[in-house]
Length: 344
Image (tube, rainbow, N blue to C red; front, side, top):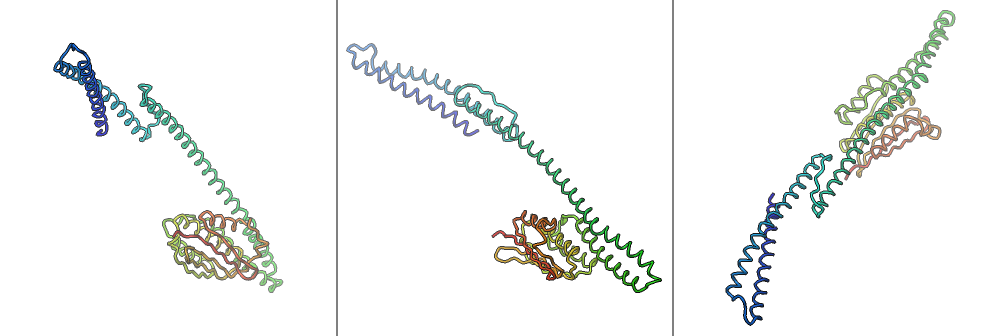
């Protein structure tokens, strides 16, 4: 409001200056006329009085006109200011009345166009947000369906076949128990081995059903809790050296937790390992996470990157700006290295 009052004073001062300048010009013209006229109609004193009277009349008129003009401009600017405040509060449907075709009127017209553009942009953003929410729900549903199909395939390919083999072998061993005890004993040993393998497969599959979220825990705390649980349920020994995990960005914790879950699940199902080593460290602004097992390994040339587990781990690492590397040889175990660049 202070600036608008200053504008009002400026208008009046400009009108008064114009009146003063006009009065001086009038006085000078009258003096020149008196000097050039041999028989002047009015004297010098009369010209001064006349000039003052004219100046006074003009001052009153200009003060009134200047006050009215300035008040009108101030009101229009105040209306524009109020309209801009409404736009700032999100009332993009409001429109300001265009009073005249002058510069202020053009400003009001442009503000209306700006409000129309902002209103259309808000509608577009709302439409995009709605479409994005719908796509996210569809993607989430697709992931759930894919996980269910994968779980069903794994059950069919491994557990169901092993259970079928257990059923057939147990039935055969019962029939051979009296006639051929040695062969029955051999089959019972095989049954025990198959049952142990099936149990490991089931634990690995159940590991995938664990929630991805860390539930407020740190990555280190979540991994140690997972490892302690697996140590009680599996014969595999774990060796951990988890350092510098607090240096990771927050969005990396859940991704890395899921990667370690996937790696351990693969080891339980395929590696036939007796020991898993998980360690981490940060050097020269790079965080490294190592996962190693002493299992039977595999040939990377034969095990293509289209493998679901390996592909998922690699994609999760890339989502947080990391790099996923894996080395493995038959009968020499598997070694995974995850590198993430840290902030300075």
